Image (tube, rainbow, N blue to C red; front, side):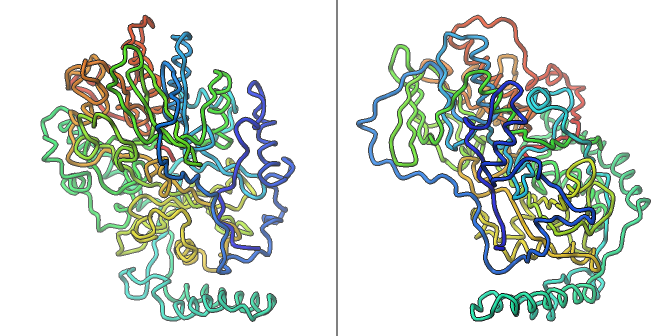
Length: 640
């Protein structure tokens, strides 16, 4: 069997099944279309814990299947002959923000014609799933739900209560130590392992060997590498009491200190120019980055949440150790069903490349130019435009604006893209047996976040019998793993996927078996998402910059009306930069996407003079006007 690195193609949304109560049928259809499987075969395993479909499969043979191809768009030569399509409101993007914006307009102003365009061939955006070969649905993107929030209500309505508690502090921690005492030597630095790997690479390129001989040699080299792993480095389980000491220090000293600094920044006691970043402030507050356990605690408190090791102090929140809610079923399908129920049918495979928002027309003040994969030019003219694309699309200048944005992304948009890469390793058997939600192998003396964050998806509450460990790489650990030249390549190199398993090999030397399948997401290489998973507030930007770029709410005290992007020469707000990044209280959370789309739709309808009644938004709660505000978020996950 070829090495499998597959983002499996799903059925078109129009064939997923009926809207009302059709979720289960839809999943069965998707499974059958994806792999020709009967739904009853999903994630079954033998009593021994070995997957029947994974058994005896060899991994890393020097060949790999490619992920699903991203849609390629031919260059559009000319739009002169294109006939403009008229609509009242054009919504760009069919993720949760775009779908909610369109639905809100249908609710409050049914006479307005709404057109939704989407660059991909599916609804959902970064709420995205994949189907494994044995029919198991895994979340490539958004994975965690919040109680008493819009996204979980949507999920429960169309999917059900198929979720489980998930706690990042329900963990087993191992400290990896190597012979020199520093931990700086890793498995791949060993001469013996290096030679074994070179032999394995030569074996992959030798077409003269018959299959039986190849398998025997591969088996021998794999056993040799496992033995050398024990000789080079060893892993010791860290007592829970040791970690409890660090947790107490953070709760009583570091977190209160950081909360105060963050408040001082928001209320301008600290200027944006003085913002040295989260790491600098953590060190001032007493964080010991040299202590492996404190280093890990910082990763769990910040990197795990924001996808990066550093960022603006404004991005710091008191992230309590509350359990997460892990979505087990097809979250993506809930958005598809909601769109269908509201008669929202996006025009797929339509990538926007230019927005004009100052036309001299009495009614249609905006013109949007887009292209289809075959190079066909599409032109839309609208009264208003709501753009819900990822922040990285603006940061990478993937859409041109005429006139140019008053406040350009480079100078004013604090929301910079970061990566949160999920890698799902499927093994022939369940060999780790920790009984906790997460496994964290940290290397003594090495401050590296690479290959630290492992989630056990095989546990009883999630997918028992799946034999899957999920590795999560944040921006810095992903860059460290693949090197900068490979960051935008869709397919993570096979040797990188192999090396990332080293900490697990070392931690479980006697029971480790090589995986038989690997899946990973690919937002890092996708221009539709701005080459990233989600965005985070970068250093050097103030709240003024944020509102200048994204737009202002009428109760906002930072800027005057139309002292922001999107207004024409007559001070009419024509273009709304919406989506998950513009909802201040919930930026880059799934709930923020829902609320942001709704928020922009309400503002847009009021700009047209429509009476939509009283409304409020959770994006800008009243407490933002109070200096005694306490900014505290429940532990949530961004679009991962």
